[in-house]
Image (cartoon, rainbow, N blue to C red; front, top):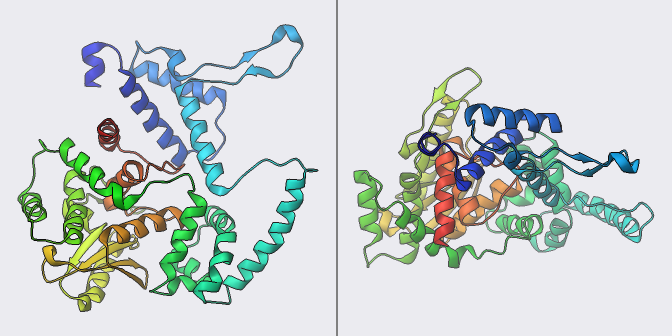
Length: 386
């Protein structure tokens, strides 16, 4: 708004940002198919707020071939709003494994044969828990299981009851990796080798940002040459909530509003515990806090060590499961993959951090992304750094 007041126009970046915000809201709130009239109305609303903006930037109505006798449109509607919305839909279809088949094609016959094989694999998975035998069945059913998750309103607990093999604390996470490979095959990012670049670029972007005493202490510990690489990475993960602060309130059904603190946002990602015996107490405390806001506990990680700079073991907590890892980046990776492949919401107190990681580190965009303007601006700056 300030930019428009000064220049009487929106920059290209601001225009794209405006479209991203509108489309994110449409995706999460619109239950019916959008028409050309809807896009036209949205453009008029943009013009009402920003009078000097050009309609054609946001929406170009379809053109009819009146002289050819055709009753179909020669060109579909276009513009930034339309293109961005349809790109989201394409992402959704790819994630669900949708494709078009000619009814008489050979591909259609293969799909029928595969469907029977998928049914057998689903049945096998509901009665067996051998991880090595499960892998081909799991891979074969990835898109079918994901599609069912999208179409139902089941909980994580219900999903785990259907596929108890995920409860295996030593090997269950390997199946999550398989699902991610199948559902997000276009993501070729090496998270481990890219983490330091990702974090260093963010650090440079926020270097002039005012920092709390807690953030300053974490930065001091992180720069200690004597700590291990894994401890350094865990501290970097804790710092994310200080750089990407929560904004706004979380509204519940009873009209109770919760404005998360930085500390609460941090706990939606990672928590430090001195002893592994403290894990049960941490989980119980977190459940009590979430119950107060009528929320459930979403996946998060715990780092174990007498001090933050001495953490050595890392756990991902999902309901009653505790997946253990030697690396905090692997724990973070599994958390993200659970959110994406189990169609699980990010914890509202840390949503801005998780969506930043998803977009900035993994370069993944989904139909369900809800973007806050300050996060979008940081992502733009991050892309420039890259």
